Length: 543
Image (cartoon, rainbow, N blue to C red):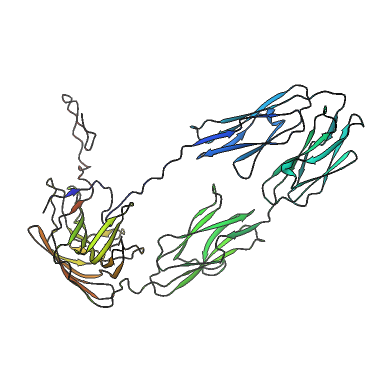
């Protein structure tokens, strides 16, 4: 046997190849605002917009009490813009303030927006508004009045909502009063705008009434993303289904029941997990049935409940198909005739540490007839093309330890197909000269569990199979002559069809898992003061 290549891997003891998915590129966190300076007249101002660009970072608005007294900053529902407005400055002197966007990442600098406002011009004519701010409920809000008091009757004025608020604020002027009404707010978020009162004299500045409307108050309710009210699963499920929950003014929970309500009994084969309510836009949970080992379909219910007795529960029916009677698709015995020569082999082997008392060594054999080829995708998975036999055999030989030459041989003998038995601590009892039987797969036959016979028929098309059968019983006879092995198969699948034949190969492409490691129970050798000490095992090399 040729010397083999040691694979620097940390896993894949039995099931074969393991791979790392490429990491997603990380976006550098950044935070910018535009503009960073805002200037307002002394009175009659429309609100202004600041655009916030945040990449991979959250933020919050902070402002001093002095600035809060005359500056209002509202975060809009798009999460990308801020609306900034100021109250009228009745004083002659200009004033300055600011607010800051503080990021939740210390590596990102805070962004400050400065706000300046001119001082009022004092003239012979003036007017005042009372009140200067109005607040309305989200729906069905009655109109409110603002009184306009002028210093001289010759000062006239007009009132109108600012352009951005014309679609929801209505203004009617009568005498010295302004009637302000608002349309119902269709959103649950607060909105605001200004009513501008403009004198007919240019020397007198306009003034604004700030109008704020609360968000629409939704009635308590509960719904899920399963609009049909039914989830259907195959008999074997690898990944569950995520159910999203929309809950308004209620607390909720999800439970499994054998009846459409929560008074039923628990269902052992159906699991609800991953209930997530905090720090997400939409709460959710996962539903996953266990593999149905019977041939009969079965059903149960997931009931989403609320703490409000007036809000009805949401019931989701879960239906799972019956399992297969057999994993095999064989309809007759199979005799393997294309593995007498030219067989491609790929072997993973796990020797024992010399200090570890384990009775077996693990082998994983991939054997391909000359007509079968394989290629690896970017994720590290193998795909098979061509026409011919593909065998995957997992087995335990007698104990074999690491050796300095790095040469290993599969021991001769008869290997019987048998499942692992479990001891009283639920640990597998590993028996030498055993072939692991084929197991249920997730539908991806590129990665099978246990030992399988597969017939590749796709020619140029990847992963197309004809016969597929788990190896469920029987024996494998191993005989080595020099560098060449003869593997004689006398197997049966789970339906009792025989799988027989002979494979002749050198098993010369063996890859060894893990490293040989020192006995952890032995103390480390003390450092030699004359030599300056020694590096521990697997330490960095010296210069």
